[in-house]
Image 1: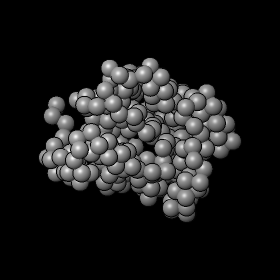
Image 2 (image 1 turned 120 degrees about the horizontal axis):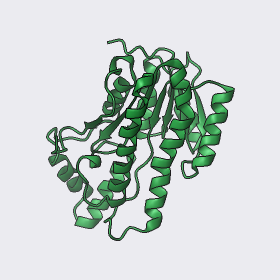
Image 3 (image 1 turned 90 degrees about the vertical axis):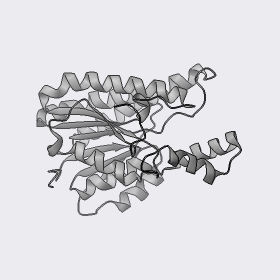
Length: 260
């Protein structure tokens, strides 16, 4: 299938590891010109070197704890370089823990890094999408928007807010050839999953292998996802082939989520 992504400009957030990096690589392989964005310049340079070299891929150094600075950097980049047809909003999830004991600062920080930053990026990028009559905004969030996950109180709350923001935005922007969708990863082989397994091991007294196997047993596929499998779903939603898919939550979780 031709995804018709050749020479489409893509901005991929959190693109130095895990799902973000896999997505940057997948979009580049399909012909997109990718701009990476994350806070660690050394990791950005390392990831940039892995992208196909026949196109002028690039990166932006930005910290998602400061939405105003993020907005300024992205708008300066657009002014001096080009706009973006594709925006992949992807930021590391909040720390785990029960919701009742969560500090208010944890909610504020997560709201800033996820919803506020998603919003300022969309505001900066959508004008170019409108001018091209082509736009894809894809938010990498969590299956918790369908089924809250135990021990991830702050994450459940913020992910739900992002899903509602996304659906509202999809309704507003659809008339301009812009779609807004959410991809909901399940347990995926990333650094974050490794940390979750370690935490479960400590909490339960089981080995990390036992903790991992218990998590896998809850998945009909009986395994964790590879980051590349989630990236493939994101790449399809980024493509011209997905033009009539708008405002959805797409689980990529091996069937773990029990709701429809």
